[in-house]
Figure 1 (cartoon, rainbow, N blue to C red):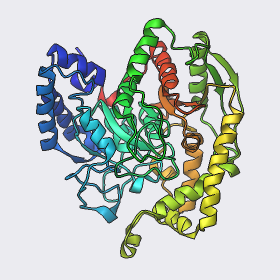
Figure 2: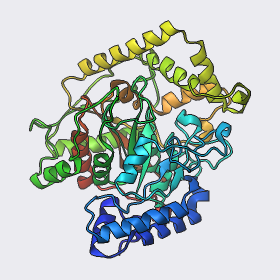
Figure 3: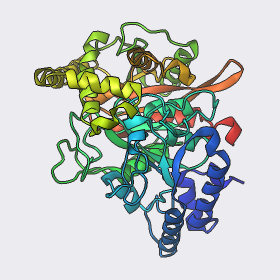
Figure 4: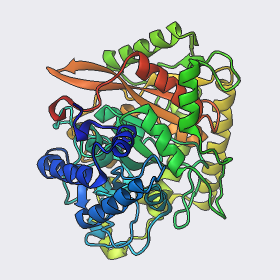
Length: 483
């Protein structure tokens, strides 16, 4: 019999409607596991027990009344970069310690309207800046596969919660890889939607369009269901896509028709295999990171996809046009002058870089990133998707990323994550798929692949290809110690 903590969101929906369990039982089971394992993995910075049990009772009544929403009664914590009214909102920073949110951000509203149960707030690094999750004064988020290694960032707490069986899905956001990097470190699925697919409103702003909201999951089906729940625009959005709330049904139809290997136009999916870094000139890939790509390529070739190796679409120097936007984003966060010294070294360094950027440099950075997006689209126009390693190697010990010199810290992160941010630049969707595992120093660790669409709005294609791989070569739903 499948234990409650092993169930996906889709499994729970079926179990609820059969009467096998109910949202209150599932919620209480989740908190039992949070009490048992959170000190090890550092997933949650706040548990919202009373709120969650109230949500569970509401969901139980809704299900009894025949509520058809697929996520009703499904636990889904919120990343602590997002506000939920009356709940703590510290954004991983000592500067905001004890802060309580006055409003609820749009993504949290969407997930509440879908009927999910807000278990609490998950860990994030300070203001979501780095690719590791070591928030000041809080537990670090660690990979449940090996708790001496990082859970990634900045949605590290969310990913750790999923891989340790504390929740079936979890909210995250992604401005440079912050959904996909933790998903890879923790062996789960992380989909970054297209720019304009999910509104940042009513309180958030799109800025240069690098960041988007999303949901981390353990299965591809859950990724499709979750995307349906959060997709949509609000009045005044700077970037919008046509509203499509049928990703789950489209995925199911493609499975039944055995067309997971076809593009939206009915042709075989064209895959470019990329083994060169994008944000640095050179980096060293772990052999198992390359093995993960080869493993995926074999499955896709057998399925009838068209594959060939491709080349990088930019140089590391060109990628640096991204840097002023990242730095000015950090500098724009309102922090009292007297609190500046409480910030982490990396945050202070990025803010200094941002304050030094002139208006002309910022304008040039916007233009440079847009031109880079066109360059990437042109270079890979003959492909539907780009297949690469997700990271340069396995999840690392935090000491290999969080360095005393913030410039060296930033450089180490670039080498660790040589692909993800390019899809924030282009705005096209991308997904981390936990296809491969291998022993490193005697411990089995996940090695994910990265699949990036070459066109905006192609989440459906990514979901089909990821589901094809999931069907062909299923991955474990939980890290070994938490099954």
